[in-house]
Image (tube, rainbow, N blue to C red; front, side, top):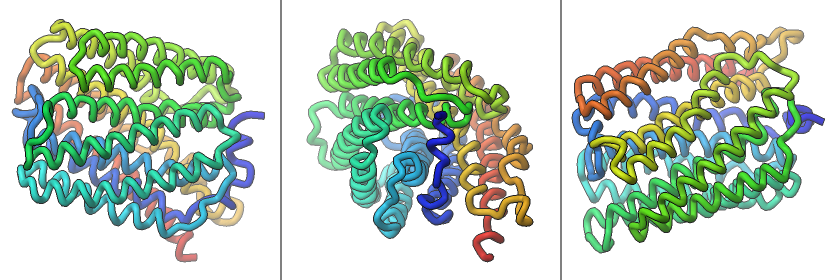
Length: 425
């Protein structure tokens, strides 16, 4: 039986109210627009960013927390109960997660942008409370996901990574005022590795074992190579985190090499899923998915080159840009443009009952095409700006990215607009 049949069997009975996941998706779309606005304002600083409070740090966290984490929360609290066939006990904790994390993130990133440590610390504490509550909800759902061994392994490891990310994030926030960390830069690098490769990266790899087969109408990847890929990814994460904390180039090199092996095996599994799937035409979203798949090994190779000073003056900046904007952001919006219409279709009447075929109507939306073109162009232009150390080129790339973000926000608003009549009914 294909993943799609397993996933969809009785799915409606396990769906949350539409307002729960879509409030997170809507927040992510707004944060996405803010991300490009802030990046546009601080383009001169961004091309050679090496850390420190200001507009670039705020834009990085608008991406990692505001877009990636918010989307991950909304998607996981909806998709995991459906995939595991275990409904959540209550809805109010998820609402509380939203009302803690989103205002907390705004305060946190406002403090970064304005270099106000008191606002930064306040936002960090509020955000931490919301994320810890989410950790509890995710752990409860993973505990009941006995039938999804591979996804569960990725999920539990991502959860541990998130817990350490939270601890390091709070420590870094307080360190801006108290200065107690022996090496702020080492802690910040470990924070980046655990947050991007650990929490978000492992969730991306894990959920790919559900979502890619579901959209391709294919069987799940074989368990043995899937676990081998997971083991390599987890080992690379541990090596990278320890290497960052102790400043070991040898350990970071080993992490990259093991990570490349994990990425190669994962991509081989995903390509096999697409080849064996019944659905061959997967549309624009899987063009972006393939771009993200290319970006994963490219990011690791640039990181390896940067370790040995072979990636140019701004090699470290280019590594972070490809990791966050190239791999994670590209993959997230590729999948999100499929998930949102799919979930919305569960809440509107079918065409036979007077409803609309929301999935097919939105599959070729002009806003999605505009977003894809702008996103790809912004990636190329900004990567060039970092290599050339040119602030003017960075401003052009940020402006293009902003247009794409507005287009995706329009797409998100259109889906919510289409669901409103069904909710009122």
